[in-house]
Image (cartoon, rainbow, N blue to C red; front, side):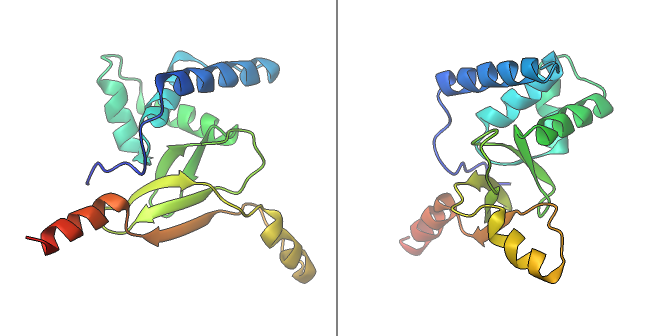
Length: 164
């Protein structure tokens, strides 16, 4: 897979602020941001595109403290449950939430060239689907938006190839 990122890497201060918010949030919920949960959040936060479960585990192994697969799985699911990460069902990958705890509908930009994805700002909310669904008796459990296209890096590559 091409390692193109859909934007600049977040500044170290932004990642630190994310951890501070996470720790404060979990203290209020009487939950812990354990070292493995923190490491998974850091791994997702530093990378601007989605990662598969196996890539997250591979990254954790580089620390020399490889957790059991189930521990890493539970850490990912914990972060998803509390809104610090999203699971992209389309690609079966995970991405750090860009707006933890803000009521929003996750939106993904997916590059069809290399199946890379990132969370994108979304003007929609769950209400966009909820009201029409209620009229038919349908109960919406989750709303997720996705846009499939070509990322800037692939467009640049295509332009470079045409110019040669």
